[in-house]
Amino acid sequence: MRAVVRGTLKSLLRCGLAAGVIATVGLAGPAAADPNPITPGVYGDPVAAAEYWRPQLADDSCGLMAVADVVGEITGDLPTEQEMVDLAENTPSVSQEGPIYLDPDAPGGGEGISYKDLVVLLAHFDIPSKVTYNEIADETGVPTGLPSLEQYLGQGRKVIAFVNSAIIWKDSEEQHDSSDHYLVVTGVDTNTNSVHLNDSGAEENGANEQVPVDTFLAAWDTGDDTMIVTDAA
Image (cartoon, rainbow, N blue to C red):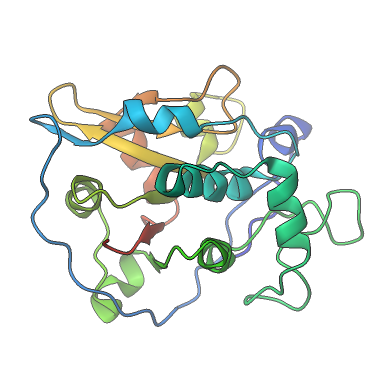
């Protein structure tokens, strides 16, 4: 699945992504262990993670900014958007010929990046990670879905989810059928039934953005619950 531009200018300026068919990826990984919430009922540490949120400046850089956010959370050193662009433009893609990312104004540019290449970019920073989604979860041994998401966050692992942006942003003018946007899931609060996000494409401050669990699940379901999860420490 490579993200491509959605149909309207408004969508283009928010992230420039749309869903394709998810190809099977053979990635092995251990099943999640029982979570250990930092605060009772809260998985992850969204307040600490909010420090590493930055807005995306390019039309289609939500994937790059999600990777930068995770790198910042793990290492304490947050790459800039330009540093991520330079890296992606000079790193071969594992999902297509050519580099991971092309400038939106370049021929063939403006299509965002593949979820497979998020794993490549994280590996550049010595952060191993895996892709999972419903179709391959049993095969790879890397579960997805809300209970697994809670477990990963409770273990201190970082998660990038592929969602439908219009559902997250409550945008009735855009399509609600396919995933088109990467964001970092920083917490799940079972006390308030909310999911915490670092969302580079949000119109307002997307640091520690909070949405109802049902809203997140609906947006995530459009991409078959696709996520990139870092390995356990």
